[in-house]
Length: 507
Image 1 (cartoon, rainbow, N blue to C red):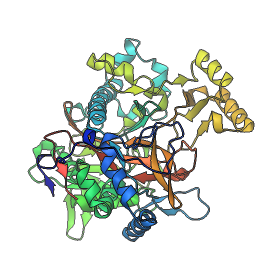
Image 2 (image 1 turned 180 degrees about the horizontal axis):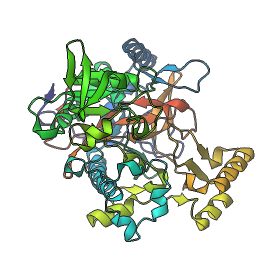
Image 3 (image 1 turned 45 degrees about the vertical axis):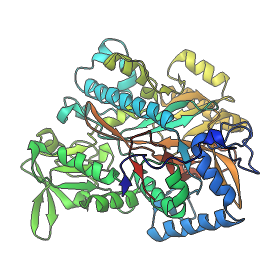
């Protein structure tokens, strides 16, 4: 349940009329902290949170933290780390102190993300059809054609309404001035939204007053918005289309999320073996016989979708699926081929895409990026490895990264050799001093670095919805800049403050 606006919720005394609370025994250590300023004084939107923390008895914050962890454990909110010798199934670490984003900051984030996804959809349509952006010299052909996720098999595809990417998770960071930058785009099978919804559920129960006083925008309608978008994707405007979630299976790292979203939407969770294609139509095997499938929210990577077209050995996909898709008899979210826009080298050209396709200046800036494929950039990177963050273009999950200032001489030498051997696969960026948020460490609070993954639903070229908030990932290791759960990171609830007239969530 949620109220219709902020009316009636304003405090009798404004922050300017009273002394602002201070977060005691907490040090910002010269980093930009999103909850308090350099003197430890609460930022305007964090007043209710800081007052609550100061009001709690000694030990109460850690008691609530452990209670939430037990609750998440009982709900089975897990992810998989295949490289961990101690076992693959893990509970997502959670931190009890929420991240709070002001209405003004969120307005720019929301506008910038809508602009970005509009341009990326135009780019995907272009590079698989006319290739105008390449022919006009805005992006070199070799940048696109050498991308491992550029799929020639998708040439000529024309998804409905020219929307290739319906569901996006774009990673954002803030620097030491609080400015927002885009770190990377995730346009294939972005994961994590289930943690957003579950984190919000447990936080509202544990901090109802601070939550209400902070005028937080709701996120609980995401599954219904996702479902309605998927239904409207169905071919021929079917009145009651069948939607399914396609998962690789229980051993996938995000299987919990696949099953959670299917349950929340009230649709079937299927594996490739549950589907078949006959007469260029997709059917689902059921106890009552074959049932037609109209929309597939696929959480299977592109090259495993259809062994007739992509990986011939794939047992995760559905033979003939691409035939049914090209025939317009089934809708896929996201469209195959979107991985080319995930590539960290292609990422460097998104500002140019925005200017080229939209005739606008980017609202959100990229992090400055050096492409090791360019000789001049490569020389600079190799000479400054101790100051840069180097990333493998095709890696994710925090793998394939060198954080120069924290790396050993041997690690830097190893990456230098990798760059020389395969320069196309590496980009480098300056080491940003990422913003921090107070985080439970033992029985007290310390600052830890964070990033943010908002989730975007795109139904049409000008019909884009940005979930107000997203997955805040936190680097739980002191001094670490790597927030990925596979690398020891955790998550926080993200509170976006409502503007006047906007809907406010109820605890």
